[in-house]
Amino acid sequence: MKLLILNLGSSSIKYQLLENKKFLIKGLIERIGMSGSRIKQIVLNKQILKKSILNKKIDNHFLGIKKIKNLLCDEKVIPEEIYAIGHRIVHGGYFFSKPTIISDNVKKKIKKLLNIAPIHNYINYMGIKISEKIFKTSIQVAVFDTEFHSTIPKKSYLYAIPDEFYLKHYIRSYGFHGISHKFVSKTAIQYLKNKKVKLITMHLGNGSSVTAINSGKSVETSMGFSPNSGLIMGTRSGDIDSNIIFHALKKGFKIDELIEIFNKKSGMLALSGYSDMRDIKKKYEKGEKKARLAYEMYAYRVKKYIGISISVMNGVDALIFTGGIGENDILMRKLICKDLDFFGIKLDKKKNNFINEKKNVIEIQKKNNKVKILVIKTNEELQISEEILFLLKKKN
Image (cartoon, rainbow, N blue to C red; front, side, top):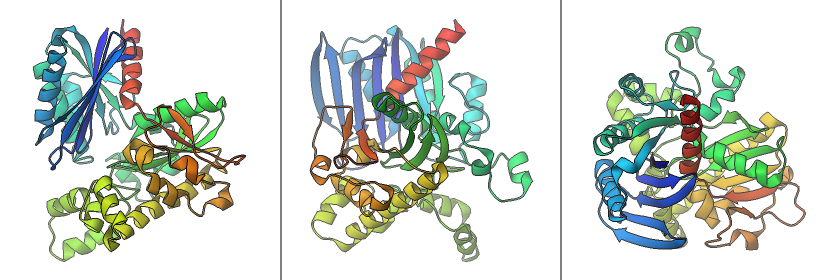
């Protein structure tokens, strides 16, 4: 059974074609809508890996998915052979807490959530619509980023506002990046051989979040009602005082204008002029003050949520870095782990300097350190495929 997994981010598309949980083709389109966009693809053919990089301007996600279909066809993959398409959907809201086969009714509900996650759910929704046209015989399945956080207790997910906001409008903390947090925490539990381990997982990328995981269950997370809360991100502000919004409205800003500002014009872009951490790092290394401040603010916000997570769980056994920044940015890992000695978190600078390590789990803490510091490569696509296979098995 062939499954194609589409994982659309705000400026990227990850994709994997799998059969029996083993990848046949996987790729990444990055910097969509920006200069320097490119496609990196790996094909497994008779146990031989064929890697390729295609530098091509990709203006939007629609063109990205069309290009993926063409690349699959180039590798002799017939669209009709793909049994199911798995879609990562950022916000399941109050409608969805489990993987779901997509119907017209499901699409309507996903569309209703566009106002809560305007960047991601719109992209996810369009990904479904495009996939239905291109892969007409495939079952379309939605897997939700909010599902993993359904275990967060009520005292955490409720806001201290009148009951009607929750009871009538379902306003509460939902949490996001759940597919990634679930995958890396599951990997860590297997690696550490401890089902009751206390973990802090940090998915750091263009979108970023921290989750406290106790015995395999999410108990607290930095993102809330929408993916805009918590950490500083590529173009999203993260936590702000709600009165800033009210003050801005009184000053003449329009609601749609503020949505655009806090979702697409804030975060690292507002601080440094760039949304991609790789661009900011180049400026940092040249000593640019804005880039230095942006790096320090990003790391500081992550450290705050590490402290929150430790207090919620009354301790931590392992700190986990994942996502594009978490897996690759040596400097950011160093800044985040700095001055956390009190918690028993001590980074080994030499181990932290690894480059292109092939292992899925890498330890970067000092020898005999109380708390493990792990870098784990996330694989949301594999996690989505496992969720889909479980769903289809139950259905049949």
